[in-house]
Length: 117
Image (cartoon, rainbow, N blue to C red; front, side, top):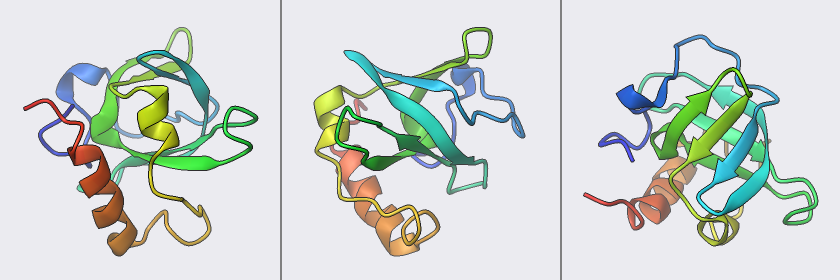
C-alpha cells in the first residue's frame, strides 16, 4: 500500500482525472463489487465501492492507497486487501461519510493496521 493512504501508489497505473466509475474491484481473494464513486482530491483520494449482494448492498470506502493496480483495458481495480478485511471495515454511509474528515481518520486507522511497512 502507499505510504500515503489517501493517495494512489505511483505504480498503480492511476491517471489523475480518469473516470473509474463502474470498474470492477478485486480484493486479493476475489471480487468485491464495482466503483460507485471516486475522488482524486490530493490527500483524500478514495473509492466508494458498491458491494452488491456480496455484503447485502453495503457500500465501502477504500482509501486510494489500498489500490495496488488499475487495469483500464479490463476496467478492473485491484486492491491490497482481503474480502474479510473490507467486509469488517467500519460502517460507511455514502451520504454522510465520503467527505467527512472524522470518518477518514477512523477508516484510515482501520486500514493502516493492515499495511506492510
